[in-house]
Length: 363
Image (tube, rainbow, N blue to C red; front, side, top):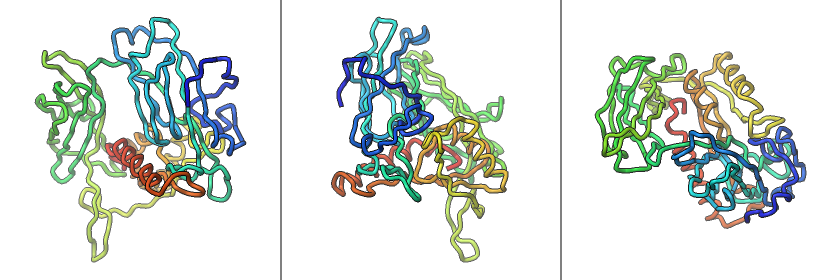
C-alpha cells in the first residue's frame, strides 16, 4: 500500500463512515472477492479552524477494517491493524502552512480470506454469514490538544466499600492530576494532586449503586497540571459504582451484581443493518433497538461478535442495560497465515478492545 500521487485517480465518492459494500456508502460494491484482493484508497482535503493554532492535532479513527496506512500531505503519520478497535495519530508535524491539507487512507481487508477477526463477515454471504464491511466504518474526527494532555482514564469500582480506584494516563508523565466526582452539580468526593499513572481511590459517601433498574452515573472532572501548577488539560467523564461477580446461591452458581443474585435476560444483538451493514444509519435508529429491549422488560443485551461505537455503550451505561460483549471471531474459511498468526491477531485485537471498553459500567 503506497501513497497515491495523482489525485485524478480518485474517481468515486463515498460517504464515510460506511463500508464500501453498504448501500449508504454510495458505492454498494457487490464484487466482494475483488474488494478482498484490493487496496481501498481514500482521499479528502480539510482545513483547520483557529482553535488548532498552537496546538497538537490528533486524528481519531473509530474503526477501520482491517489494515490501514494514513498519510497527511504525503507524509505517513501511522499504520494500524485491527478492524474493531479505535486508534489515534498525532498529525501535527505533517501539517503545512497551506490552508488546505490532504488526507489519504489506504485500507486492505481480505475479509474471510484473512486470518483476522471478522465476526460474521464473509465474501460469500448466506445463511448466518454477513456481507463484508470493508474500509472506514466508524467516525473519523480531528481534535486540538495541548502537548501535555490526558489520553485516557481507568476506573475500578467497588460497590461493597463505596469506592472507586482511578488511574489517569497522560502524554507527559511528569504531570499531576486531580479528580472530582459529582452527583449532578454537587461534588461528593475529590482527591489531592497525584502523579500521572498513579492509582487514586475516591470514597463516595452514601454511594448510589449502578443497577439496570437504577443506573446511577457519577460525573467525573479530571484536571491535569504541570510542575509549574499551570492547567494543561481538563476533561469530563463518568463512572458507575457496581461490582459484577459470580457466586453460589442455593447451591447453584449465579451472577452477582453488587453482591446480590441477578437473573439476566436479553437478546443476542447482531448490530447488523440492511443499508449500513456494521454501521447504523443514524443515532436514532441505533438507540431505538436499545429502547425496545428495555421496554420489553429485559435487563441485558449480548453484543454479538461486533464492537459498537461509544454512543451505543454510553446509552447502556446511562439507561441500565447490562452488556455481554463478544469478541469478533476470526480465522474462519480459507484463512491466510499460520495458526500462530491467526491467534496473534485475535489476542492482540481482543486485548485492545477490552482496554477500550472496560471503563463502561454496563459491561
